[in-house]
Amino acid sequence: MTHARRNAAPPSTGPYLAALAFSGLALSGLFLACGCAFAQSPPAAGIEACTAVENDATRLACYDAAAGRKSLSPAQADAAAQTAKEERAAASDAERTALSQKERAKRAFSDLYRSEPGEDALANAGKGSLLDSRWELAKDSKLGTFNFRAYKPVYLFPVFWSSKQNTTPTSPNPLNTVTTPQDLDDFEAKFQISFKTKALENLFGDNGDLWMGYTQSSRWQVYNAEASRPFRETNYEPEVLLVFRNNYSIGGWKGRMSAIGINHQSNGRADPLSRSWNRVMFNFGFDRENWAVMLRPWIRVSESGKDDDNPDISDYMGRGDMTVVHTMGQHQFSLMARHSLRGGDRSHGALQFDWGFPIHNQLRGHLQVFDGYGESLIDYNHRATYIGLGVSLMEWY
Figure 1 (cartoon, rainbow, N blue to C red):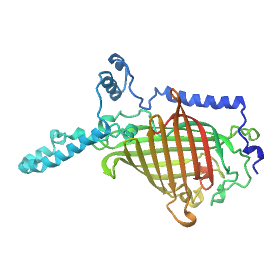
Figure 2 (cartoon, rainbow, N blue to C red):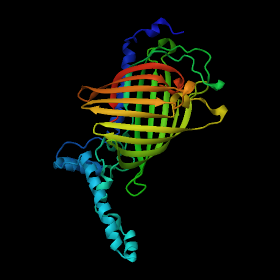
Figure 3 (cartoon, rainbow, N blue to C red):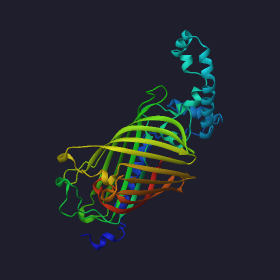
Figure 4 (tube, helix red, strand yellow):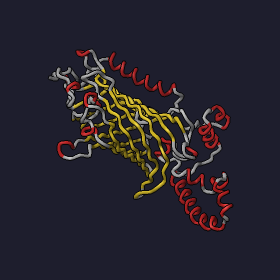
């Protein structure tokens, strides 16, 4: 049973808060040491400063900024793409009908024919939009391979509160059921790191990029001196995604991207605390102005009964989720909704709200509120409310 002190505010013990602060600095240093490789904006300096930029696309952007050259807005890029599409449709039929069969065959294999006017405008639809800024979708946004890029938010919560800790994690597999209650505090710390890099680019003409991503989140019982301050749960999530640029409209929203990939998530623990699953992921991204929406239905890759740590995980962690992100000045809001897509006793889900806000200069705060099932893998079938408050090093956009 949880002791009364578990519900008290976390102790303000200097050494442990110092350890948390050090962890935050270490995380900050990790990304700064990568040369701020998460596609930072080009330096606002003179033309001579641009010669030191190694990446070709970033160096060009630096020269454009120094020369005062302005890029098209996403709306202007969309308009240019639409104009090019209409002009091509109007001219192509009449032109090709007039050509002889021999000439049509010749042009079909001609570089000139494949690079007809308007091709660049079509390939640059949505350049500068929210999803393009993260996935390098437009032709001129591509920065090459093996550059570190931001993926999911990166944050440190010195305070992460749970309304009900899961002291006896269970599963339909008897090998993955805890029988002795754990001694857990309601207050702990949580942090997450996440990044991705492009392994292959332009697999199909000027479209189709292969991305590799990695996300890790940890829950640390730093205030639990009686249990020697253990890491209660760490989730590891590597994935591979084949991402395609799209250009269509639905009700004022622009369909920017689609993707298919493989996702593995596990907590790297031995039985009875082991939890893991593999999924085939489908991503569909939409944006408009300062809004972005990502739909992610998935299919779980089944495992044999004795090897399945969590046979009913899809009925709790869901079969798909939707994340809506809105930027407002320096504030960013996101809402994630996840559901099992089943009814009756198999109907379970979760909601998570995040708010990133400025504090001072580059220091940002982050508030997270989660309610439902599966805040972590060990809690996949455990419902609770969680509230975290801390600092953010990287947001969605």
